[in-house]
Length: 420
Ligand code: EPU
Image (tube, rainbow, N blue to C red; front, top):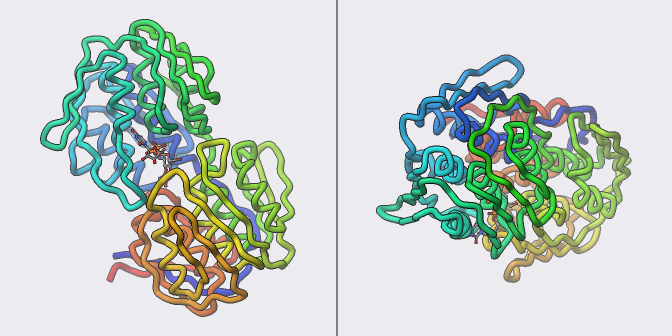
């Protein structure tokens, strides 16, 4: 299994380009299922989750072409099956995003239930409840969701909890439903907004995206799209935290600073000087040690759960005590036990971890457990004294494009070790 080796003690300095947002690319690729017209998505990052999505769409009969400059072309004019098999869904939970589009376009879908997950239970009950409210007949049998609807009907869908992919599934389904759908308590994440913008380009009638109430007036058919995905705010946030932890100065290009407000606020609180333009952001720590910050995760525009692990790594070396509370997922602290192996002083109490910052961590072998946890371990490796090795980096390849190259560009001494 591939591993990443990091020599601690280097300061991150320089400029790096942020890739397209994984969590926007996945639903937008799936949206190609809604139309028999060709679609083209630009700015697609080279990630394992993208490859899995392409494989899933390909299995359904979608013709895929890979163009220059990270472009993906899709032609779903002839769908051969409406099945998303367990083998693919188990490697990527976002496969559930085929459910809404398939049901709306083909009247039928069979999607494997995703099963367990390293960061929490992550059920899909709200996706199913929303689709049922729109008239879908849904059965769960032999590990598969079987959904059918001649034509979905617009409905008022009140989401009991805020769910990103749940909102996206209902939104996509509603574009081709008969009549009006209102999604209440909708997710406001920038990735939901990017999907909505793309659907509007396809001819969907959507308003209110980016707020908690999205209104969709169903149409009979959708055209293709030619869209460029928004930049990845979590990748950007991860590099900013790395710069803050190492006392560095980093400029990121291809960024949407307006999607990073909660993260930037916390970095300023930690002592970073931050300047930004419409598509760039620069963090300067001026060689200082960060101050500890308190974090509580929440749906957007709150502090993102996908940045929680990185900030626990920052607090591990910060001046003072930071309290980090995870409210979105119930089991997203697996990285804490790994950070303790570097000497971090952290104590878990329910969904909270109390972190007393240390002025030094010492290198140790670490094991990645999920995508964002692995990013946090790499960040810890940047500051730990000695050479750290992070094992199971396939987790990081799901969501970070060329992380070792990009961090190397900023002065980190980091390399991928051959599969042993
Ligand atoms: N939930 C339910 N029932 C549902 C759906 C969700 O109870 O039917 C609960 C979940 O168990 C969780 C909470 O609602 O406690 C929020 O989950 P959500 O559905 O919003 O998560 P998701 O859509 O599965 C997306 C991202 C995640 C990110 C979360 C939260 C994609 C492909 N994934 O997941 O990204 O952490 O939203 O912001 O968009 C990552 O990139 O590393 C990642 C895990």
